[in-house]
Amino acid sequence: MTKFIQNFEKKVKETIQKYKLANKKEKIIVACSGGKDSTTTLYLLKKFGYNIEALIIDLHIGEWSKKNLENIKSFCKELGVKLHVIDMKKELGKDIHKLKTRKVCFICGINKRWLLNKKSRELGAKKVAMGHNLDDEAESILMNLFRGNIEFGLNSGPKVLMSAKEKKFVQRIRPLFFLLNKDVKKYSQDMKLPILHQLCPHSKYSYRRQIRTLLNKLSLEDSKVKSKIVKWFMEKQPELREKYASKDSVNYCEKCGEPCRNVICKKCELMTYIK
Ligand code: SF4
Ligand code: ZN
Image 1: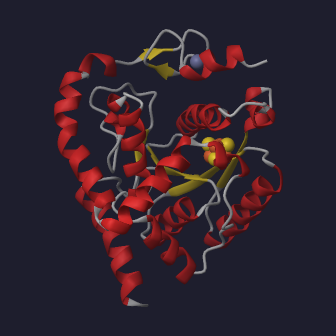
Image 2: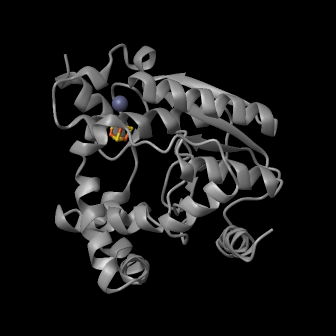
């Protein structure tokens, strides 16, 4: 085992322990996409002995979805991890990726979050492990900041704080929270994890991609810029939580019964406009 692999695994273990992300008895659903982050999370949580099952949402985005699904199916078999495949088209009754709009990522993201929480809860999970890394977090912080929605980041961090939240939310954990994207990439390549190194064909329209380009440019000048952004936001979070405490209350959607912030959840609101 190389020094890099040792350090990488140590850092993930330390994040899990320091932030008390999970214990070994509770059921964790690993949200898989077929990408390097979630596949690395799946591999490491299994290696560390956690009680995991995997879940992948079949998005029906042509060959890209097919290949990701194949990879996850065979990797779960190899690891001895139970896999749940959720069919987005069947669940929503329509194929949102065929819509002629540049907002596909926005629509896809809301529906993925809705499905992931609902299905994980129905499967009896106590936690949902996400593959988000430090770059993803820095991007999310800037996206919220630039859109004037900094309070959307209140659920950021290695784990979502649940004190004020309702039981129908399954707590999200992010074991790779402090790992850089380039290090996750190197780890997954060194470990020869089965990953399709190809972006979703819709990603060229995403706002996240523009922010990523900007952050990567800034990193050429200052290699620590991403961790500085994340550190700044983590320090700001308690203050923001206090300020936005009333907005953090939980209701149930009148249409689907899932937890949300308003009378109707974002997913149901959005889907009424989509024919
Ligand atoms: Fe969905 Fe956009 Fe991500 Fe593709 S890039 S999986 S469409 S959110
Ligand atoms: Zn709803």
